[in-house]
Amino acid sequence: MILIAHRGISCQRPENTFASFDYALELGIPYIELDLHLSSDGIPVVMHDATVDRTTNGSGFISDFTKDELMQLDAGSWFVSEDGKQFSGETVPIFEDLLKRYSGQAHIFAEIKSKDPELIPLARNLIEQYGWLDTSKNRFGHVPGISMISFDIDQLLISKKLMPDLGHGLLTEACSAEIIDFCEINGMQGIFPYLQAITPELKTLITRTGLYTGAWGIQSKQDVTRAFELELDGITLDCPQQFLEGVKN
Image (cartoon, rainbow, N blue to C red; front, side, top):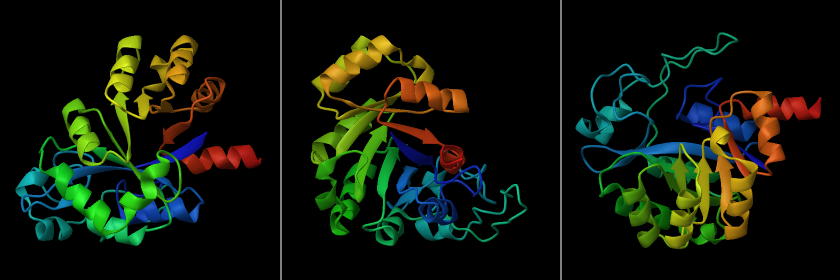
């Protein structure tokens, strides 16, 4: 079971920043989840929310900012780690820069957040340009590689059509036989439900389909234990290093 750094090491670094992603790699965690939006001038950028308000010193929708305007924002000052470390001056990552920075070093789980249909072909061009398309036939969890995931079914199906060699996984709050069937019928390689929605019976059904099974919503050691008991393939955590430290101890 692999441990996926949720927006990087987001419990100790400002989420979806190079500080957060770099720290994951420093800790020996090469599996990184991040979120994709589109700037007003058609540049894929990394941020979770549709607006910049929560995680930068700016205000407004990402789609109203150009790439250069986004890069002028401070994406780190809002966050102070438990040990008092500050991150003033962290910038909003541009997807292209991220692909260059982590080439050959990580498996990226790229969550499609924007509903803009132009995001997918633009992201695909960058993924191909920087050689990630060629590394990703191993699907989920292999380093290097990149997978596309989303709660948005329409965007996920567009991505699957444009990048059939990549692993694609449906993020979902629920888990049911119907959802599992949907993934299988539409050629998804993975399913990523909320952990508490996965029962042993449903996990057995997922296993029979051959789908990769990830999970999100892990908040405690008990959740991690449950994930192990379910024999999941991967889990997404804000603080994966704390679990690793627990295993070593």
